[in-house]
Image (tube, rainbow, N blue to C red; front, side, top):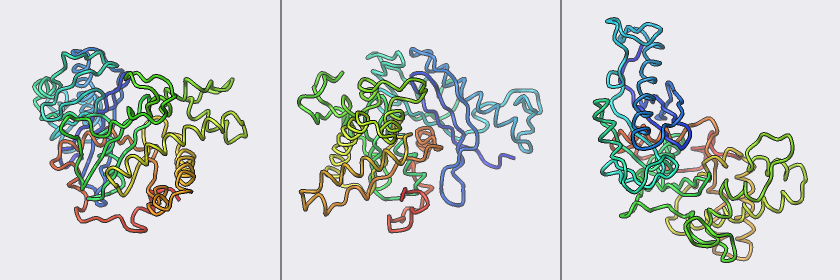
Length: 358
């Protein structure tokens, strides 16, 4: 039985849309995914809105088919009067995490190139909300993932940064339980800070940006997966390095050094308690965290100042089984988004022992 309305979260990417139904009334304060649906992403403004609507409708019907009682649904997701379950009957609000430039206050996106949304933009919150008769909020996907990670780790008012390492690199920053977007919605865009003046040309026009030397696409450009491997380039690189491949070890250490520079930027600019590695490359898991932590220690070897900050101890990696971007998107429908967490929670030794790698 569904005893209360849930939140819906969408993580919209260039190829797939993940929709989740989230319950925030759990005893431990974590947002729990109750059900999920994946669809291929339709491109262009109309395609994005249509895919989001179809994903939410499919999610509602899947929930209705799963639960009986108050909804009286049959296995086809229809109510007792024969009408299909509607999103507004099950969800109190919808949050969306999406790439591109996002004006969260207006629920509008522009320059989402992989989605076919150009400078003309898309009033996503307004159009989808009108179509579903539900309140809709929209946020940059990395910011949404930062909220999802903060919720999973039960951070409360603890300051954290989520470093997303995927096709590109960017960070989501949560300070005192609230997203820090900046007046121009550009907070956390550290992927376009140059870290190597002799590095490759970045798509932004600069040379040697962090994104151009340490992202998933940067790794793929420099590492050819081994014959017979169906792993992503980053995972294959780390596996080859662990197996003793000297070229793989050298490239792994270069990538780790660059990511350590990104971690150091975040720690020295906003002085967060915790930095969470996320995104597609972070599915490597503990080996990635370990490599970046070692790089941080190497870089601090000659600096009493950096050693005193102990940046490596602030590092963790997002759990692989947690769709943090979709969860964080759902939490956007709450104001403030992390209100289900104890607001007086503190980051003290042992509190996160069940979540943080050793």
